Image 1 (cartoon, one colour):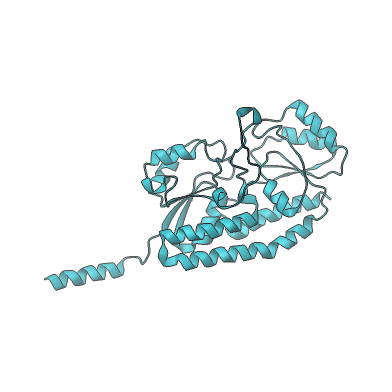
Image 2: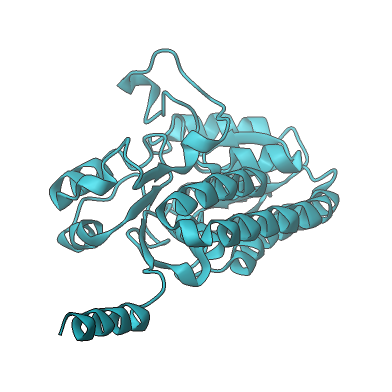
Length: 296
């Protein structure tokens, strides 16, 4: 009888999946793209914030909490970008494995060097991030570094596939390095951009494209008439470039500055579409490059 029970247990073990999927809850579609690219078939990914919403200003929803309750890993942008809703959602999920500081909690911004740090910050400065600019998603080089760190973390959660994770992250980094010279060549000598919010700085620095100003007078503060007038006076003195807004930004301030200065405008998302692959992400960078190069 004991031999029969042992044989049945062995058969059941052999019939079970070799490795369970790592369930990843990604806060944005950029983070979800990284998880799918690095994790491959060994992860299942759910995105908490769609790309048509500003991830600064979401609210914790029951649907998010249900996903987080079952998650093995939270993949956040970090740097306080999701501070208004992610901590509350994680707390309400009551999942000890994904608490900050645990193996199941991962922030992209913590894996790379950030610029724009403040030793002191208050509301008079707008919605600044004291620990530095967290908008790393549009910098392909920083994203490749994040992918390497993510591969290591996934390897801790699923040791059987750690080499596969490492290889996929390495392939992403190689793809970035192949594309980067072409992107920089296309925008060489471009007159520059005006951004709505301070969230495309890393990409512009990577491409060596000048930023001539922002529609927001301070981060998160709506454009005022006096600020737009000052910006228009400044832009009239230079060669027209392109004003970049995201689809959830209001069009009025952009139109006002464009009509007064002759600058082009472009509406481009901050993150790729739901379900995006690495190729889709590179396509988004292509769109930014085309908009900047087209302003010449």
